[in-house]
Length: 237
Image (cartoon, rainbow, N blue to C red):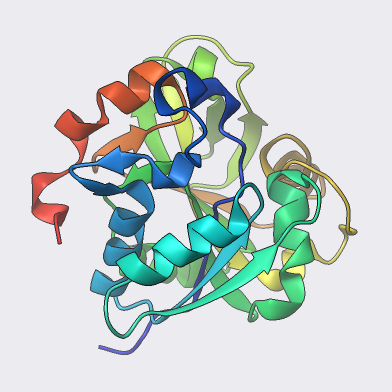
């Protein structure tokens, strides 16, 4: 099988909400099943034929990159892009834009989704999408944000952590065509609150692929404490 496009991982957050259980440990390095959470993400990418990963770093950048190098499976190439000040998810992505190819995956460093990246890549191409999101069903869309799609998957509404009740939420694994980022400039910004709603407003081809696979999020203390039970056992290295 041919290699899939490279992936970038958002791994620079301060993790302020998780500090009551994680202390000063960078969120992506919190231990899960005896390994840093980031190690599981890197394994998943290598297993799915991604050959190159760009880490978007901020808080404790050197520590995170050092651990990533230790945890990365053989054959997975790692690079880094470091913030000198907090830029948010959109700003971190834009700072690294010159280091990314015309098509790439983007992953949140604090979530894990059991999804086939090959299927996401094919979905992205089949829909001639500018941006493809993965979506999972959730009973707590009021906390995590709700996404509305047409029958063909085109996203018509993206409410990041403002919606109520049950719905489809953003699972934090994306496939990008870099051209969709052309209107945005350097500087602090949120991918979820600013960029994606602007893309939808501009009628860009933004689609959502609904996924039934396991989804875990370590962004909140209660989520992190329950993550060990939910990480798919078959995905262990």
